[in-house]
Structure formats: C-alpha cells, structure tokens
Length: 216
Image 1: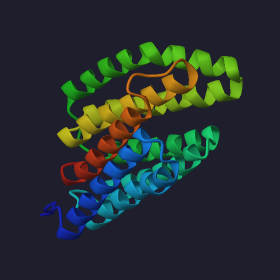
Image 2 (image 1 turned 90 degrees about the vertical axis):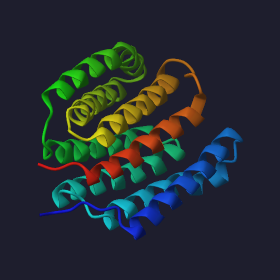
Image 3 (image 1 turned 135 degrees about the vertical axis):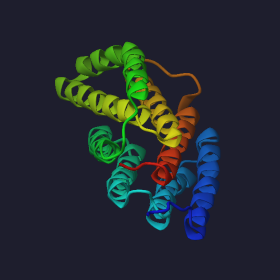
Image 4 (image 1 turned 60 degrees about the vertical axis):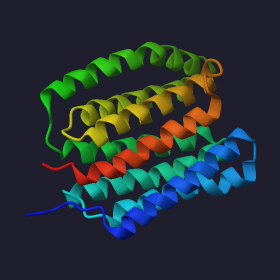
C-alpha cells in the first residue's frame, strides 16, 4: 500500500518557496524588478523541488505535474522579459501536463459538474479577452483561445478530483490567468500584478500539495 507523505526535505522546499514568494510579492508591489527577476522563478524552482521530494500517492501523476511546473518556470522567465507568445506557449504546454496528471486521478462527478459551471463563468470575461487578443493579431487570438481551452480542462478536472488541494489550486490558478490576460488585453485588473502573482503562486503550491491526495 502506497502511503503519501510530506517528507521533511519537501517541507523545507515548500517553506523556502513561501519565503521566496513573499519576497517576490514585495518586489512587485515596490517595483523592484531585479529582485522579482530572481524571486519569481525561484518560487517555481522550490516548488519543483518539493514535488520531487515528497512521497506522492501516485508517482505517475507526480511526473506529469513536475513537467507542468517546469514549463511554468519557463513561462515565467519569458513573461518577465515581455515575451508573451513563447511564455503563453510554455504555459499552454504546462496546462496539458496538468491535464494528463489530473486525468490519471479518480474523478468525482459532482465536482466535474462544478468545474463546468466554473468554466462557464470564466468564459464570460474569457470571450472578451479572446476578442481583444484577436483584434491585435489573429495568431495571438488563436493562441489565447487555445490557452483558454486548456485552462478550462485543468479547471474541470481539478474541481472534479477528490482532492481539495487540487480543486482550490485550479481555481486560484484560473483566477491568476484571467487577471493577467484581462490586464494585458482589456484593461488594468483589480489588484494589479501583485494579485496575479499571489493567486498564481498559491495555485501552484496547492497543486504540489495535491500530489499527496491524488490517485487512481
């Protein structure tokens, strides 16, 4: 019988991720870009380490999640240097990684229904985001539309899992993505970049912890 466990090294990595995230949020709030350039990817490095060091309920799901986290790290670096298209591409592939991992987990029918409802609500601002991106460039609009589809898949499967960590994590992750896209293509979003970073890091950390509860 496989017993999931948050090992001491994994816990240390999570604490370091939290400390680094706090530094990043402070750097964003005070416009210290040099600090942000170190802290933001640093959070993901520690989260990847935590995912690798804990004992998951299903090792196959861990592999998919680590790939997703690594692609998130790549996307972070691209976005920091305002390379939106390659950054969005990296995150799109990362979402596919999460979809693969979550698809391996047992599913909870009522949660899947809630996921569909959540995605329906998300698509209200999502339609405007896609239209605005399309007006800038059809290629950009297509990438954003594909990204929204992948994000919807992550949200539905996460909310449809038996893991509260995954369910809450995908909600935070979705809110972060929606705020970022709204700010970039429509208008400044409430809370600005600080809120985007907070919801993003919380979502990613919860998905790492979800490895303790996700299984087939």
